[in-house]
Length: 171
Ligand code: ADP
Image (cartoon, rainbow, N blue to C red):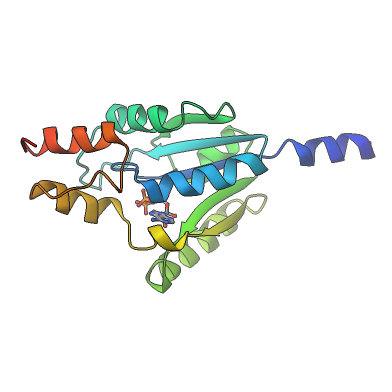
């Protein structure tokens, strides 16, 4: 019995949910730091029709697959339900989120509390951003790309190409 419990602890499955519209090096940094501590990490794209997105679910998943292709314990998926319902269905215990600055804190705090009250068995764990990515967000990247600015330091080359294509920018 005790051995089984230790075994289960070693096999922690977590989810990193988000819009990933598109995935940035800031997201990737969180994935790269979280994955080695886990048995499995499901990176799940939220399919939220209330949020206007630049890339389709399939495009966002494709970018994520490309940037995580060398990480065998990372799985890419999407969900269009309440996060806690998806978490329950996939038998996940841990929700990973990234924290950039105090501005993220209020929203993340609220989400962690509501998720905890909806599904008490799930724990949210926060990873603090690496300093070099603390200013990075998908929206700032889209804004820079839209005006033809150089985003190649902040996203995977395939994502940069996708952004320029989306905005009709020739570089
Ligand atoms: P959402 O729309 O759910 O905020 P995002 O795709 O913007 O989804 O982000 C998903 C998660 O990744 C959030 O917890 C967010 O705070 C975190 N995140 C985004 N960018 C960074 C970054 N540069 N450093 C650390 N965490 C980040």
